[in-house]
Length: 293
Image 1 (spheres, rainbow, N blue to C red):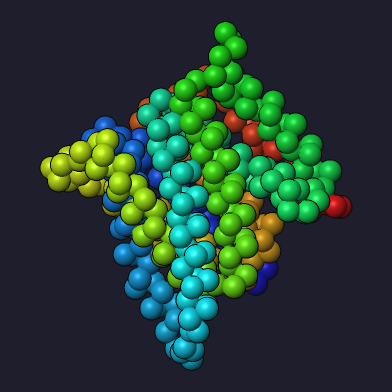
Image 2 (image 1 turned 30 degrees about the vertical axis):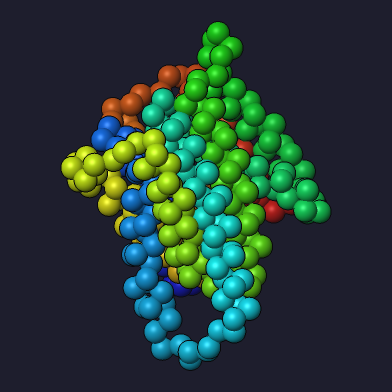
């Protein structure tokens, strides 16, 4: 294995650890501020952090003046991504208020399976391994979310709807990154998401600076590390990696969320929920394996 590939794997693993642990930060942040406030502040911080990252990544490259049409396409792409991100992250934040971070991590990871299914609407075929993974994932979700009384937790429902939004977010990114710089577009999406969340934050949550400052640790973690550093690690680490292998490494985010929830918040999962997590993880891995279309 080449040194560049090993370096890429380590960077992606670090990104997965940061993102998995971010579920803990999101849960702790809810003790001080509302979902819209948390998302507004952290995504604005993420956008600010990406500005020097863009400068660093473009260092030494020949500067090419962007045409007005290219700038317009970059802005449209970033705003569309920001809208999808605002919906997905807000639903996830509401969900984390009512469920454990471990369950939230695995339910959110369901987007890996939703993406190829939604891709059917765009004329993209799914291989047999994807359909098998869907069945396994549905069984996993049953064990993970459905109680003995056949009811679905409110938090689990929010997180699942968030996963749908994240799946749409990925498809939007997939389309616009064909034409735009990924990091620049991500920077715009963070600012767009922050502005979108700002309006309901003022209308419904009426945040105070004092409460935001009380939540400075989880907000900074989610903003600087999860948004800024995590995304940059993914961009750099995935450069010399097979996308399938990269997806498999990043899917470890769901496992890390369970470990982080147990170590930091002492949140234990029942045997039934652990079986659901195991089935979900098998489905996630199976969905990433190459197969015939």
